[in-house]
Amino acid sequence: MKIALISGSPRAERNSHQVTLFIESLLTEKSIQTQILDVIDYKNGNLSAESFSQGLKEADGIIIVSPEYNGLFPGELKTMLDTVNLYSEKPAMVAGVSTGVLGGVLAAKALQQYLVKMEAYLYPKFIISPSVESLFVDQKVVEGFYKNVVTDTVNGFVSFCQKLKD
Ligand SMILES: Cc1cc2nc3c(=O)[nH]c(=O)nc-3n(C[C@H](O)[C@H](O)[C@H](O)COP(=O)(O)O)c2cc1C
View 1: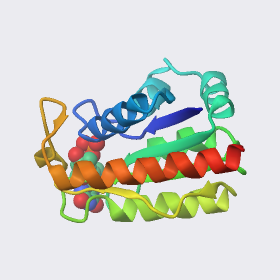
View 2: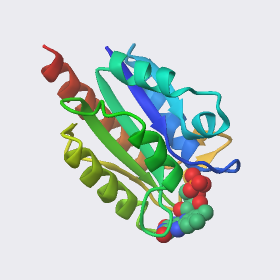
View 3: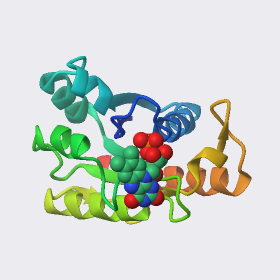
């Protein structure tokens, strides 16, 4: 099985990429192949539309990790997602990230709405990452409850992808 992780922050000093890397580490522990498709690479021309398409086509599931900017996901992420129309019947899950206490829930819900419109097979549970700066120290998760919730949610999504693949 292969899961594509879309890392959605366009900022150089971004916090949400740590969430992407944490989710990637959980998938790797389960011997699941991963590929990170990064908005910054797309923006800088280091990820072509063709490579982005190929990454999505090869994936058995997609996880989109997005920061919350003014109650939505970033415009740069929307631009990258809109480049292709490959979400139909693709299992997908979202993870919101913010420095606020609501953890990016508004960005996550907006992304869910986008994925429903694009006819993805949306996994109904989603991840939030509240006060993200306090969740990680030196790229490692230091908050036990968050770690457990994310692990359970990722495991549930992997089972969902596996059932749809079989
Ligand atoms: C333009 C902009 C708007 C933002 N709006 C929100 C917001 O609506 N709600 C929130 O909780 N955090 C907001 N934030 C803070 C982000 O949650 C914070 O930057 C967090 O680290 C996730 O984004 P990052 O991955 O780019 O770092 C905003 C940040 C920026 C740059």
